[in-house]
Image (tube, rainbow, N blue to C red):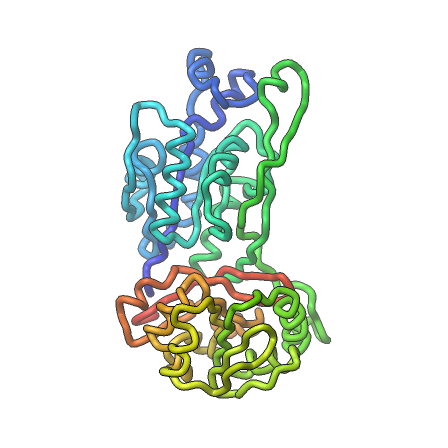
Length: 375
């Protein structure tokens, strides 16, 4: 099974101001240390990472030097790669922001960060839209909706993702109190943005009878979502399979069951295309690729859709690929990853460790991807 790449950022100053009665840590770390406060962020992060120890051979962390992650990963025996550098003995908000930029440039599937609301603000100020992140609560103030309820909860959620569990993506608010005002007895909170965070994946509503998910209803809801969000002038490539064929039918579009079709501005512009025709349609033109998984097997590329060749994938861009699959279909994989076999090993390795899966109306899951030998 391929290695899962996960980012880790620890704000070593997070939480210092609480025991020192400073109502927070922003800008008062030296004062807190002078009052005898002890760093707690690494210990909180350790609690989260302990949940991942049974999977130690399947994960490689990417992190920043010393107290921002590398020291703890060495102690716990996790494989890791250190990016960037620290400018001095004390870390800063700039270090957090640089770490976020470096980790997402490296293509990690999830960024774990330990801190408080100030750390969440730093993350949100530079993170790319849609990059999944998850907060390990280690600060004094935890008002933002981007943190797990406890360090162990964060670790369990990360473990679920690595193991192939259904992990839904949602938008979490970043909020922070004005610490200077708080120290004067005034409570003033501000909204600073939103982050994409994984939440506990469940077999949710959309039931027909006997508590089972209705694939027909899910396809109707997915069609409603896609119909509401077509991008003008963008070409949507629909891969083969009954899931995408049914999705198109609910949009009032006639596509081929076993072929690859191209849709633009709500109309089919090319049906059952060859690889050469498809490349001509997407090369240099904005495009999105929708594929589904083979039930029970998990291939999304390289089985029955060879028209979607390596050069087509590169022309569209892997960041513009979405998998369409119901939770029932993902459940047939029993936690095994989705598989890619494009015929180009370098391209297969370039796939993200987890991809977005459209599973219902405005419902996205994050699901692992593997390549090569899945055993």
